[in-house]
Amino acid sequence: SVTNAANSMFRSTFENSGLKRIPKNLFGGVVTLNANATSLFCRTFYNCQGLQDVPNALFSSITIGATSMFELTFYNCILLPQIYDDWFSGITTAANRMFYQTFQKCEALQEIPDGLFGMQSINTNTAQYMFFETFRECVGIKRVYKRLFAGITSGATHMFDGTFYGCTRLKEIGSDGDGLFRNISNTDSTHTHMFYRTFYGCSNLLYVPADTFARIPEGASHMFDSTFYNCTGLEAIGDDLFKNIQTTTSSDTYMFYQTFYNCSSLSAIPDDTFAGI
Image 1 (cartoon, rainbow, N blue to C red):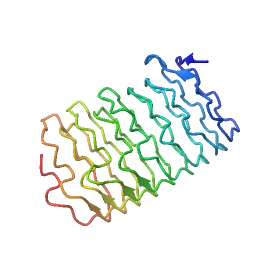
Image 2 (tube, helix red, strand yellow):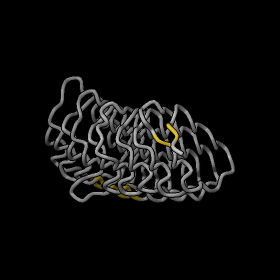
Image 3 (spheres, one colour):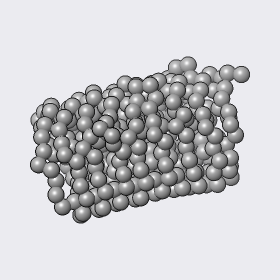
Image 4 (cartoon, one colour):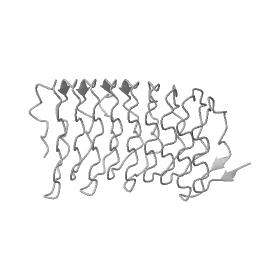
């Protein structure tokens, strides 16, 4: 049978349980007919420290996003070994706090599927805090693939705030001429703190590809505040890193505040780092 999702329907359902396995099709009959299903999977598997076996297509029937839909869903599932690229593939709309701390402290997680948030090229202009600390302290992650956020086309306030905060083994940000935030080509001065603390404390990150922010056209206050703060292993950044940011205003205060603070291994920066500003 098909069930129309409702507000907080699966909130804290298995929180603090001894669950080790999630059966296939657990939510197969749950659909979203509108954006009213707020907090739908909020804290559903929160602190399930023995969880190790998860199926693909777990949330594949969900098509419409809602506020806090996956907030803290797998928080502190310390043995969670993997997630699948089709979990969120059917979602066509974005919302505030949708992936707020979703996988925080999933320490055994070593890989994030490329295109996990590929979705359907959605406009996220009002999706504040959408990826707030989504993978914070996932200390097993070593690489972020280039198409992870391929479906995200517009920015929002605090959108990537602390997304990879404290991922201490992260070494590489994917790139192939189109960077990690490849399709974000719609930003404006209201998108403050958009990349605030995004890679904060990623102490093994070695290099920031030139195309990471290649299509960001307009700046905002605190947009890159503390983005690479305390990335002590960072050795180099690509040419023209912020080259396409050609529109700034007097209100764009603290735009690059502490962006590379305490990057003690960064001994040189390209001349054209801020070429477009």
